[in-house]
Image (cartoon, rainbow, N blue to C red; front, side, top):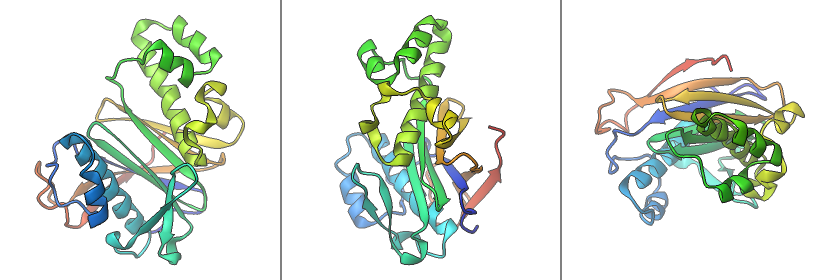
Length: 242
């Protein structure tokens, strides 16, 4: 697979819920050491799987060994490719949530991705007040109870993906804008998918003409214990309607 066309993006996602947390992840020794400080085997697994997916996805778009990538962080912590120079125009972002990891890669345009487990409860009123605009709060309160979770995570993942794409994180002030504003104003395009089947994944690509192709990633000969995680990778792609 070559790099995405200019202005487009490729989303990779991977279900790691059945994988051994001690699998031979494709990460550097420093990444493995830092992951050791994360509480909980499943959280460490998801973190290391996401790091592995970033390296694998980038190497699917450029002729670079997965362990040769070097990264730097922006002012608010957004990672970017620092080396090699031949892939300096690649942009990426990653997320993980309860056994699902995802990574979006683009060329020449900034991107963000967020994933949330739809089985999680709607946050407390205090969190909602910081996460939603006044209009969204009113709409959420008027929504049937059965739809409130989906509605909240729809808005939240859009805001989170957009904030990650622009590299500003929570400094944007999520209660100061509505989730539909960036797309309506032409600042980005959102693509959403429901996976596994309880995870909502939202991709934000800056600009309004981007296309997103989706790939599911599994190791060749995949098994529950990820014994062949270091083997070659298979990508099965399709284009979503949304």
